[in-house]
Image 1 (cartoon, rainbow, N blue to C red):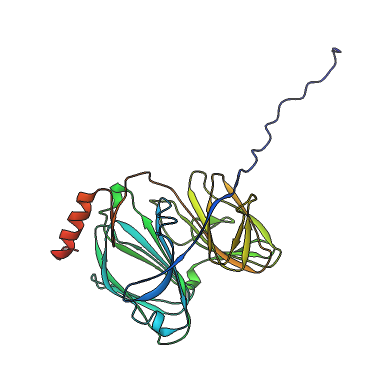
Image 2: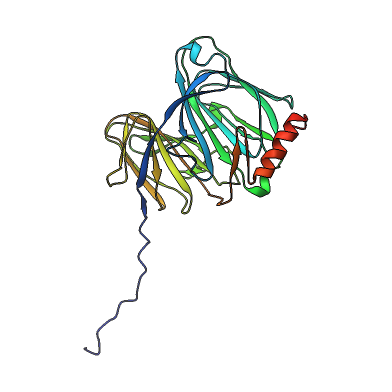
Length: 294
């Protein structure tokens, strides 16, 4: 080596994003709930019992009033959160605490059932399209008996941003493109995005490392990551593997929800509208409900 040979200082290259791929694809099953409302259950069925912390995902979509008109009369919940996101239609909710509100197209209701609540969700229309999602999100053991609360989010409170050319996102919870959603979901640090991609558009969306995540395509056709299960058609839910970024491309005009949350890795005991950690807590929930303690 010559005496005047310069040695460059070491410069750390920025860490490359680790891309999440689809590890499995799940299709929903037709079912009914409430007083006979027809819907498609995507999480909470034999093919995907849960994806910690997500307990259930339903899509309801019909322009036949007989499929939804009976609604969801008063019923109890304890131990988790329900998230209703309306794409079309009107639904009135009320509870035994005297709360009432109207869910309209583009609005969100994030209800923390906590220690117990009785509520109803009834259609406020007799014809036309009723379309949206209900997601059940678990609560950690320390929060299961917290006080119930509602977060009613009107459509205009949900920011919509452009993430890339031909890609827009409504940010319901968490953060995207430097914009924070209006929902507070501290227990799970949840991310909930409604993405719209034009034909031929593509985007990379950061997601928190360690969060469980899924994408559900409700219109069009998405290509997520690469690999043998990257193609998601309308009605497909893709469970996403580990990583901190998801790459989404749209061969045609496409809409999907992208959801992520911190897993609790705690025991789960489920019985109808009650989700606790032990069977004894379920028995107590049933006793409390029957005794009018909700």
